[in-house]
Image (tube, rainbow, N blue to C red; front, top):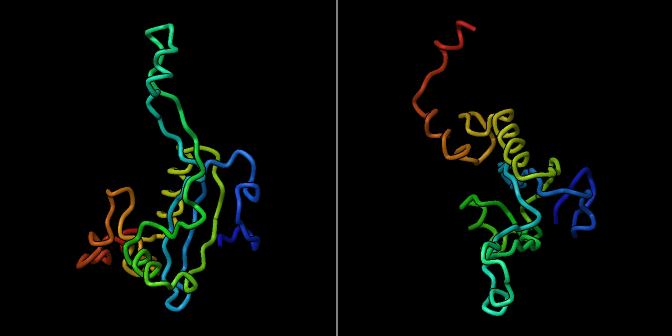
Length: 156
């Protein structure tokens, strides 16, 4: 179950209208460790037209695919982190609190707000309580190992 502003979100009808996805935080209650990410509510993909549909086309310049929208796996999703996936597979779902921080209306804004939350909360910094290990595959928690920022911070 997902929680948003102290309310359970179980179905798409519980979600604000025109929401494309959401920013979430999952907490492992026994340890207090957290994971922050984004999740799409609707999966949008191109599907090739079948033989029957192709034979009905009169204009050869017409697109040979259609856009298919389906509900995503958001109800059962626990993040992409391997540690969390392993614990969920071991039957420890009840140890996690899944919270929606905000709903977002588009794919582009979903990525923007995920990054905003990741940087604002310092998820990859050494003293962080988050188990996220990177941001966008560009900034990594390991980059902070054995690095002292003490001398750099004195100037500011």
